[in-house]
Length: 339
Image 1 (cartoon, rainbow, N blue to C red):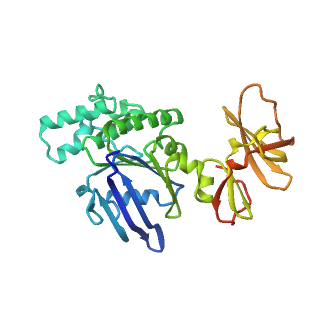
Image 2 (cartoon, one colour; image 1 turned 135 degrees about the horizontal axis):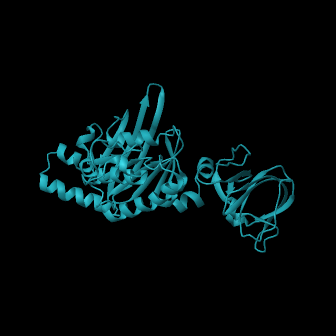
Image 3 (cartoon, helix red, strand yellow; image 1 turned 120 degrees about the vertical axis):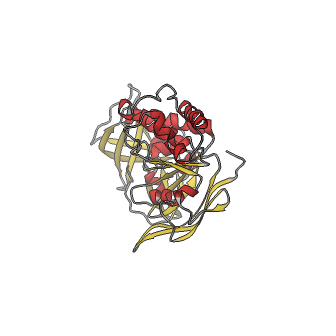
């Protein structure tokens, strides 16, 4: 990151559509050079936030600064920003090189410099030999990289990515997560990435903002968000969480921190009955109702030698008290949150 200078600063930012408050009084700093993720469910405000930063929507209140300059009312073309969309938006009649070059031609950049910049952008996304192909001759992942090159060729200070991997199948999406992170580190541009997929956010981002109902519930590193959720919503939306009230607050523990049987270093033990079993490949997830009627999720690795536990079995569960996290309000639904 570039000396911790602020690339994007939002202050008391709000956006209303009639009676609907899509973004509600948000303050946020995005550091120059970081890969920043905006994570949340549909309707949480993250895409509206991206459109506000891009200039496609104007705020109802508050300010947007880019590198210290107030751009709150500037049109998109006056902001040093480019956007990559989920649907790629490539011109089907143009080859790859022409697609990437298009924005430079609009800006009337000299032909020789356009050629140089296009070659550089395609090389940065490892498509330097694909310039003559049409979009319909490319795979989904290759088309996504062309869209990325078209945005990078303008050398923006901030690149916005609106769920750009959403149209890809699972394996390709995972491959593109690695590629996007590598490209971002190579070019050093601030990336702001919108997604509803926690795996994408946790695997790629330097920091994550978790959105809910138009507000940010927590901002932190992936580890901080997962290990120390600030609210019940964050605990449940980012991963799977067991949540329950105690006299002094609301607590959570992750399913992988709970063991079947008596764990040597555990100081909490409980008996329960297995109600459901979900095979997930590398792990198996169990729903268990404890003797106090509390619901709990336990997830264990599939080692090939583990004893089979089936629905209806009575089990012993154990965990360490210091692996439980206090997350705030005593108000809770008494239900285990499962994504």
